[in-house]
Every structure is written in structure tokens, then in C-alpha cells.
Image (tube, rainbow, N blue to C red):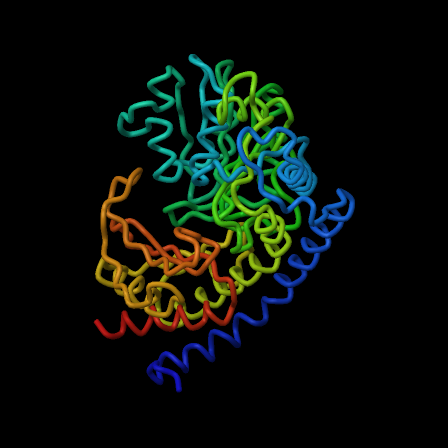
Length: 413
């Protein structure tokens, strides 16, 4: 009944045997996080009254306000914004940067070069109209040292103009390890000892619910992410979030709407039930995605490819990087994954230019929600080392089938 070769099926059996040994820890984290979500729902008295939509200015939108109270508490933060008006994670991150930073301030990235779309926001490597650079905000970055944080350089780089330190939790389009919650804790503590008023800002995309705490619970001043990644649970149809110190979140809200208006308005144009239910499901769905990533690491390691994280390494995001050595294999991987997607399975993705990226990007995303990377998807820029970045999976079973489909397509080259 399986449309895969004997080799692929045998590799699946070996990979399943190896990866299942690691699933108990993933399940434990999922259970702890589910309990945390339930406690916050109960404490804040979430009711079906909060599921209604609103229109216009939406002053006193009870559902929006309740959802933000719940998310702030889950994150260990003073305040949160959860808004469908955010079009992407990059939009939420940019809102924080433009809301807080002022001309003459320095933004310092301590986790190397940020994700491609963030480079456009910053104005790094090339000039982008409307970037931070155009507004007179300076930028510096500290490369990772052997794929680890360069603690000595970080300590010496912080100066009187360093208004904000950017910590990108996930690997982005790189083969470095993601930054763990323990490392974020130490980073924030170290930065505050050197410059107490320096703002620690975490790009938390792909990291929510992977551990039992979020960055704002361990010292980060503010963080942001996307609702069509982990915290939307595969149900939120769009949107993003910001959470952290109340004064900083409100500055970001002034950028989202207008100074003096801030977080007071913003209609719930989609059924709030989708956002509440997605948040409830998020710990379990994130665990499914992590199990899929673990399996993919075991599977492609068996086939002789370099994978990161390695099978037994701790995880701090849902992404599995796989070096495929050639652009042809990258394209085949994405075409094979797309073939076993629930939506647009008949489509064969091809590399193309995308806004915010310097290289052509190949992307498999047969998802119910366009661009949703908590659903099973894969992408990567066509540049050495020709790595594809696999993420998501609403069910582990789908991840297994999709990974086999990707491997089969490579074998057919």
C-alpha cells in the first residue's frame, strides 16, 4: 500500500526505532505546557462570550483583551498584543524595533546575521527604503563562534549607545544551533549586568512551547512572533504577537496603530475562537512538529546527510536543517514533500525570488493556511551549503509520510 521503495521503508523503520526513544521528553514538555495553558484559561475565566467578532474601532473588545491577558500570563510577561493585523512574524518584530528605537540608538545582534527578511528591516548588507538604517539607527552584529555564542565579544561590544540587543532564538537560514532558554537566561543576565537599561529583545519565532518557559519569563524584556507558527496551533488564520514589559509593548502598539491610540483599538475581524482554540492546541501541535523533526533527523542521517540538530541534541525550535549538497536535491526534496501535502499536492514548486530574500527560494507549503510553518513545510535559499529547512507538522504521521516522499523524490533524480 505504500508508494515508496523498499530502501525508504527500511530507513523509516530504523529512524522510527531511533527517534521514539526521545519522544518521552517531548511528551513531558507538552503536558507541562498544556497544564500551564489550562491554568491560565481558568484563572482568566475564558468563556464563549470572548469568541465574538468586533468591527470598527473595537474599543473594549473583551475577546481581544482576554486573549492578550492569557498570552501575557503564559509568557510570564506584563502585557501582550495578539493581533490579526500583524501580517507576519517579521511585521511583529519590525513593529517592536520601530516602536522602541530612535535615531542615534544602536541595535546589536548577538546571534549573528538575522533572518533574511529582518536584514531588509534593518537595512543590513543593502539599503531598503524605510529601513532602520534610513532612520539613523545604527546596527552591529556579533557572529557566532563555532556556531556558539561569543561571550567575550558580546561583553566588550555593549556600549553607551546600545539601546537594544537582538537575540534570534531560531537558526534562520543557517546551520547553527538555536539558542536555548538557558542561554537566553544567561544572555539577559550578562547584558543587564553590563548595561542595566539595555533592552533584551528575543525573536521567538519557531520557539514557542518547545520548552516549558518562554524568554520573557527568564529575563527578556520583550519578544515577538507569528500566530501561523507554534502559538496558533495550526488553527489561527493569521496574525502575530508581542509580549513583554508593559511600557515597551505599548511603544510597539503606538507603532502598530498610532501614538496616543496604541493597544486600545483593533477589531477582531476573525472569530476569536480560532485564536483561543489554536492557543489551547499549541503545546500538543508543537510537540507533533518536534517529533517529526526528530524523525527527519534520524531518517536523513541514515541516508548519509548532515542534519542539525543531531538526533540526540536538545531542541529550542521546531526546525530541522538538512544539508542536501546540491540545488537539484533541494528542489526534489520540496517537490516530494509537496506531493504528500493535503493542499496543492498536484503542484510542483520551483525556485523563485521572494520579497525580503537575496537568493531564489524553494518552498514546499501545501498548507491549509497560506505560509503556515507550524503545518508541515520546507524551504531554503538556493545557496551553499544547499540546506533545506523542514518545520511543522500538525500530526506526526503526516511528517513521517512527507519525509519519505521527499526522500523518494531525491532517489528518483
